[in-house]
Length: 523
Image (cartoon, rainbow, N blue to C red; front, side, top):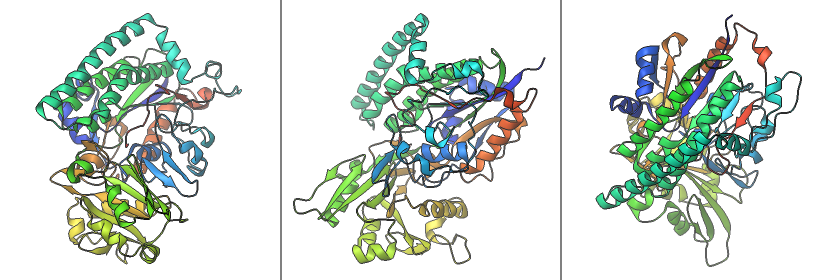
């Protein structure tokens, strides 16, 4: 008798199409290469949209709706709080405003180490202390009786002595490797972002192994669709840059995890197909402070000396005299959003010029800034050090002959992406893009590789799918454009031979770790 089928989506954070090809050529991902050579998989390049961050892209892939997610972190004026993703997430405080009417891709499956559980609005918990499934006559007994919390997944994993031995071995190897990399970089004067070394060590020791274990556990529990995210490469690329040999080395461990998951494909009740994708790429970066000797927030504090300026992630600048107002600067790689916290709603150009004359031009001319985007009534306005220009002409198309757009490969696509970002109410009063030149992005955070903005490989992730599935990426300009193709693949696999409704369950949010990050990079 033919068995039910299922789909496992493996998400490799931050690995762009270009660097995937290099990793394959250099032999860092032998199992993935085997999938290409022996099983008809094809690596395809696609555009993730803007901002090139994990929360924005995952929302598009999982719901077909990534509106009002302007970055990895932003200031929500209505909620009067910072919204940020990660191990301790604040998205839960505003999640009820998102994805209304959307059909979650994972509605009856498992979401492992993702930004969203993709079950129902009230369960979008980013810290992954997910409530236990409720008993329901439509839910298979084996699903309803389990508690898939971070603690229980970890406890189950640690009960196996082989896992403990592997944990001890991996801990020794990764600690030795991290310190070796750190001192080699110091000795040779290589660029590095120290904090990501510790983060990566934790990921390789614990988070990656737990994610792999949770994925195979979900396959054993017969969930029809599973989405699992691995973040190690993104952390290493932040630390050393996407072209670093150390970043590529991390892919060997991810390749091993993919192989372990693939070996479980037909071992249980369901025959699983595997699709591998990334959410965005990374571009080589130069930290703003390294290039200019100060943070970007210091310029704002100088120009508005009676305002308290707080950078996320960064510093706080408080005036000695009476504080007239508060400014939030939220950073995600080469993208920054500036919010006047005390002024309701999103301010347009006219309001900004009336309240803060000349500020827009000062920001656009600041060192390290490529351009600024603001609202201009119902239109969008790009401000560069040399010009003002609308994103779209009166006829609704980009002026592709303008020197600004000449730097991009597809001006029409870039114009639509900029227009969408500038349409969000939760975008900053000013949206600031770090300069991009000589294949390097100015990064408002201290990272050697980054994403979130425009320029280079950060906009171009990959999807690795079987040719027979008929997936098409040439016309994809945003993650939302892939949602319908993923849904069609899911439905096609789950239709036969048994009714999909027979295995309907509630979405499972299995956690790699509640104490370490999931979807934690500026990204």
